[in-house]
Amino acid sequence: MNSYESITVKIDSGIARLTLNDPDRRNAMTLSMGREIESAVESLNAEQDVRVVIVSGAGKSFSAGGSLATLARQAGMEVDGEDMGGGRVFYNAFLSLRALQMPTIAAINGHAIGAGLCFALGCDMRIAHERAKMGMTFVKLGIHPGMAATWNLPRLIGPSAAAELLYTGRIIDATEALRIGLVGRVAGDDFAEIVDSTAREISENGPVALRLLKETLAGTAGRTIEEAVGREADAQQQTFETEDAREGITAMMQKRSPRFSGR
Image 1 (cartoon, rainbow, N blue to C red):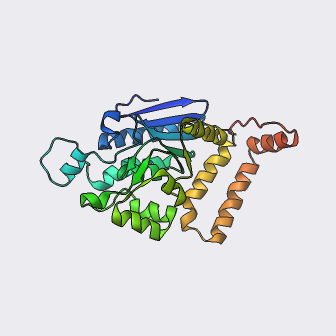
Image 2: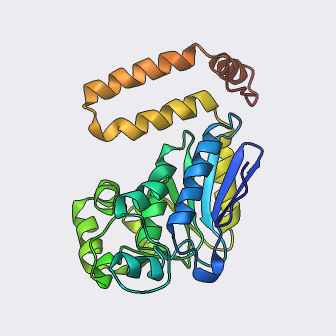
């Protein structure tokens, strides 16, 4: 695995951990950090033994969003800082997370604000610490939401709830995030344990099925029910032809845990 400056990537027992690693600046997002995420995504996709990826932030924050220096330069202000390289370049670098071929968990260990929350929405599921706060605060800075905020948020929590959060820029706590479906679980002192156990539960399933399921879910929004049934039938047939399917069925018949090989 490559060596990085703004992130860390560790792999153990089929579980990868991608961590934003700039705690002194609350993991503020820069283009160089985004470029490292693009590189990490490419490397992780080449690791056939990786079955799930946990995404989190070092220190007390998940991410405070785009660095103020970066935003100021984008607004044409004369400050020291890294240029975003254009909004789409910045967005695409961080949203390359969506190209990971295995399930992803955003472990929201602390505040996830603006683009930081958008980054968490790039994962398949979200688990939040009870102290975490979240918000789409773009309009409070006088800027339009970006990084797929207006695409992901309505699909996740519904158009009305999404509009309210986007228009007000209101910051919400983990309890409200759970209530509206922004996160799937909230944990306290057992946060790390809950994240790890969820990752292990996923990693113990058939890796071929997981990767095909990831592809299926990624395209669900654009399919009719007939197209969805067709996709499921095709993907299921692919898994029926694997050693994993035979192992899974045999293990069930023998009342034991399966030992999947990814073939």
